[in-house]
Length: 496
Length: 49
Image (cartoon, rainbow over all chains, first blue to last red; front, side, top):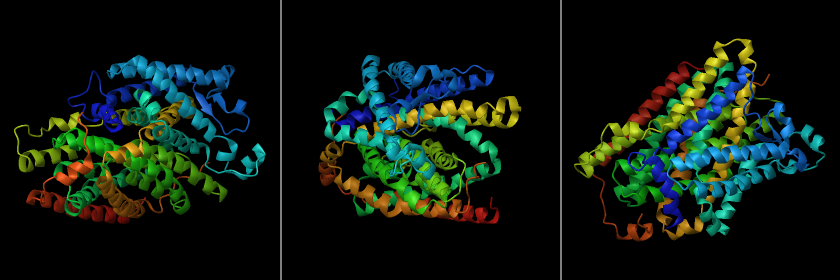
């Protein structure tokens, strides 16, 4: 089985949980795991810190100081102890999740072990002082004269590159660890956890946060009504693609990549291989964008941070790549602004990208239904017509988790006394440390799935041409224009 | 899952001209999208943060 079809196997299980879900879908699992971590973090509000052992990485030039437990209460564990504890905890939880998904838990555990150690290893390398340090104070602190200034979050790029090297130089090894390579599961867990942290950030500036939500509506209109129509037209009219290929391709490029391509493929009753090939292409282009766009955003949009956040959400077509690359962008822009004497509060760029992505995701089911209705009634008339119940079946359930953590975080931040609110940032900080780990796993996994040579051998040249022309000739620029129109002049609050 | 060579498949695929319903879908999507964006832009301009 090719990498494309194998990678698609789990994607197929995820997106088409309509019919192929084993016992539980990846969506529901990500919701359960994300909520579980969030709930454990909240226990610390009662005075019992149950997840403070999770490993955190600081910028280092002495390897012994790179790792530490996130909470001081667990300092006795040491960096190595925290790392191993985190690994064991994630191994246990995710192996159970893999078993629930119908995968071989033992095979997953072996593969996940390799994925975790390599991905986190790359993250640690990325935190090396000469790669990460940005501010003059830190140059002095670490006694160094040069740095790539990638910030602490630059480790994501290292994880991605590590994955790419494995995929392209060691394809057999990539195949061997494939069971543990589940970027969609990892990013969805991360997004569920992220809801709580964003709520705490939003609580400080509720008017700004609600204004961002309203502006997110523009993203929905742009993705579904503008992008889709143009890309479909280009694919059909200019490149002569059949409808079966053009519709999933348009959804993949326009909406949110893998999930949208698979949902559309299912809705128009395309052969399963079609959205699978499109999905592989989406991942490859997302990799290219992740390597370029954060640095472009830092160079040209550092004075409009929220335009940068919205733009990434509109331009990068998989949730994982978009939200995680927004983490890098936020770090880069905040560092650049700090060097100019402006200290923005963290969380707002990431929050803007996530809002844009979540808003777009919500409508996947409805859009797939609309297409399914048109296809099965007017184009490929058949008895197996699209049903309204498919809207719920294709709804990305992890969004419910995000909404729950966001709502609970907001209620706790705004509706409780100082005894709780003073502890809330630390509690969310612990959950957020898990979020960072899931981001790292996502980046590494995306890299491992990106075997350029094998994808090219599948004959995707013409598909890639449509993707390239649509993405770089249209999607990115219109996304920038709309982001500018709706987000220019809206600045994150300054850090106190 | 059967393997697909996209290049071969596209080369051998019969031509499928745009049907009226596809043209309607494209036209209505674009038209509605542009109108809604303009309305949202005006609202955004009249009621800034």
